Image (cartoon, rainbow, N blue to C red):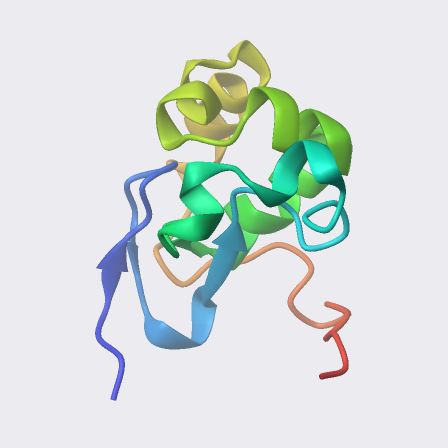
Length: 109
């Protein structure tokens, strides 16, 4: 059973139903030669647990290539001005608030 976690982006205490694994190197680009040998992938350290709102927002702000090239660490993500503006907004919302949960697309496995 999952427990609440503090989202590393917005720092909100997030219930399990509002958590997701965010791939620091998006799955769509990881087979490209440029990314396949990154140490993060080889060590299995390429995901972080974030709230669904922050995970969705990252994919709205940045392309998959930008995420893989410029935002493959949590430090790089939270240093970005657009992300900081997002955090200021989302931190005012309740911990169980999540944007787009009703129409969130689920990937087929």
